Amino acid sequence: MRKRIVAGNWKMNNNFEEADDLIAGILDDIEKAGKPDDIQVVLCPPSLYLELATDMLLDLPVSAGAQNVSQFEGGAYTGEISAQMLASMDVEYCITGHSERRKYFNETDEQIAQKVNSLLSESITPIFCCGEQLHEREVGNHFKVVQEQLSKGLFHLRKEVFKKIVIAYEPVWAIGTGVTATSGQAQEMHAYLRGLVRDQYDDLTGDETTILYGGSCNSKNAADLFANPDVDGGLIGGASLKPGEFMSIVRSFHN
Ligand code: PGA
Image (cartoon, rainbow, N blue to C red; front, side, top):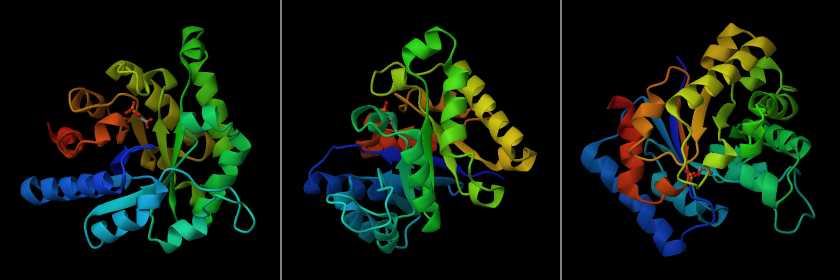
């Protein structure tokens, strides 16, 4: 059975104290109300706080993820953080191909593919983001856009290696806008993405690939989105910054 995951993408938010409070708030919530055993919870704070996160999460059923990684292995790349460094800090997941990195940092599909390779070589699970912009959906190009993103960013991988990948469908028009994809739009795209994986590899690989939804997902709409057969969880931005809100999204599977 495929993994179900709810991951919080904090983006560039919170000072050190706030980061500490947020992790403590989530752990406190879990201690009081429990965490569904079958849902993997991942926190992706800014890299600077990864050590704090891995320390606080030690021996607990919550994983730490990074928001970015260098495509290079190491050396003279000022300001960059390598996959090997992340692995040495017990980081288990890393977001790649997020639309904000594609847009503001001009990340190309080729660089994203290199980042995926670096992460996999360190046994870190890439959370590979894909998704179309509004104008692309309006002209009916959304399927083609995500197909190209997967084929350039992921489909160079051998089947055995691809099994480690988590995909996140994040329509750009839904990120941080308060406009969520409808449950039907999410299911339609997730089924399409799963079909692409089946075609590229085989049915079993398609069936076992975790596909998350991201884009203005919150405690009000999560249950509806997660009820879809091809939606295996969420990549949560704004709503991951409040412990109660984030944890009620985690529990939405069982509502
Ligand atoms: P949002 O962001 O939940 O704030 O829309 C999601 C994301 O960018 O991963």
